[in-house]
Every structure is written in C-alpha cells, then in structure tokens.
Length: 356
Image (cartoon, rainbow, N blue to C red; front, side, top):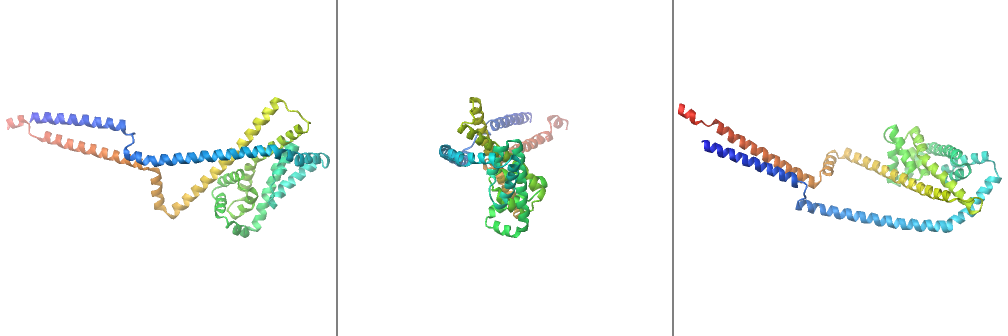
C-alpha cells in the first residue's frame, strides 16, 4: 500500500510537471498563427494591399492633375485675373467711393448674394484686399451673418416646397436631417462642420429649415464655421493685392518677404485641406452612427449579433475556444487527482489493520 502511495505521488508530480510544460508551451507559442489562421489572414492581407495600392494611385493621379492645373493657372490665369479683374477693381475703389461706402457695399453684397444663390467669395476677397485683417474680418462676419439669417427666415415660408425639392436627393436630405437632431451642442457642432465642409452653403441656408434645427444653434454654429473661411479669404485677398503691386512695379519684395509669402501660402492650403477632410470624416462618422442606430432599432437581435461578429474575429474565436478547452482539461485533471487522493486517504492503514 505504501508502494502504491509512492507511485501515486510520482504520477501526481509527473502530471504537475507536464501541466507546467504545457502551460509554458502555451505561453510561448500562443501568439503563433496556426495554418488555419494563416489561411484566414491571407485574404485580409491581400485586400489591404490592394486598397493601399489603389489609394496611392488615386493620390498620385490627383497630385499630377493639381500640379498641371496650378501651372496652367499661374501661366495664363493669374495675368488675366490681374489685368482684367484685380487692377480695375483697385482703381475703381480708389476713385469712385470712400472707404465707409465700400464697407457698406461689401456688407450688403455678403448679405444679399446668398439669398439669390450667388457665391460671396469675391466680396470676401475684396474685403481682405481693401480693409485687411481687422476691419475686413468684421465686414465679412457681419455680412455673412446677415446672409445666413435671411435665407433661413425666407426658407421657413417655403418649407413644404423645399422639402419636396430635397426628396430628389435622399442622401443629401438624410445628412441634413442629422444637423437637426440631438442636443443644442450637437446641433451647433454639426452646423459648424457643414460650414467647413464642401457642402454648398447657399443651399444649406435654405435646406436646413426642413429639419428640427433650432435658430440659435444654427446661428452660433454658422458663425463658428465661418471664422476659418473668413481668415482664408482675407489672406488670399491680401496676397493677390501684394502680387498685383509687385506685378506693376509699385512694390518690391525682399527675399524674406518672398519666403514668408510662399510659406504662408502653403500653410493656408494645408489648413484648408485639413479642415475639409476633418469635416467630411466627422460628417461621415455621424452618418454611420445614425445608420447603426436605425438598424439597431429595427433589428435589435441581429444588431447585437453583428456587433459580436465585429468584435470577435475568427482568430480570436479560435484562441478563446482553445483556451476554454485547456482550462476545462486542467480542471478535469485536478478533479480526478483529488478523487484518487481521497481514496488513498480513506484506505485502511497497516497499523489500523494490526490493531484490529
């Protein structure tokens, strides 16, 4: 009986060492992919490589097209713009009106052009060229604020017609509907993103009335979204005036001024691109969140299953199943071992037999 007890102890120690070795092997090679996992990963790697290749091809093509367009614009467009537009306007504003009258005219144009779907960019350029950053910014913000309020109030009178007109473009109408949902701050945020995004602001001024948008979030979000655009227009207007003065010999730029203008121009372009891309991504994320919410309301069970499928990939599921099987095997081994030891403890000892 003592010999059997020693054998059981040796078996227990050998099993304990084996479990430790298995645990060591599991910890070392758990992160290595199995052949099945490799087969699952190969199509994903191919799709990612294909997507990255297509993305780089698109970026290269757009870069080449942009460079060609900029070269053509600076070769033929800039001289034409200076001779036919900028210089006559500068002469006209210097002789025809005083600065107070020009300021009133610019405010009126910025307020009335959006009502008739006319872009107000040229008026903002003029405000930057003539009045600079200080007074030019005030003129732009006052004029554009009035130009955003007037279409909103006019649109309220024709709300049903605007709603019927928007039904022709359901995707655009769905994005506009997002602006009118949520709390005050969320409406403010979405309106500001729309102002920064490439969405036509003249259409947005009228179309927003078909949503549940309140007036004050609309006004505050519109003003906040117009601030970066105002500075960009003022800067570009000042730059065009500087180039016009240099073109006609009224001003000579030093090397430092040339470097400053080039760097500031590049920064302005990068800023516009960053704001535009950020606004588009945020609006797309809001659209996707709204689509998920609608789907969860209409299909609650399937939405939970879909979330689980996104959170648990096939590889993670296999690893979890493997871990569960190992834990179950270890628990079963311990239960069996405890049962054997219990039998050994209950067995009669030789001393007890001798006493009996």
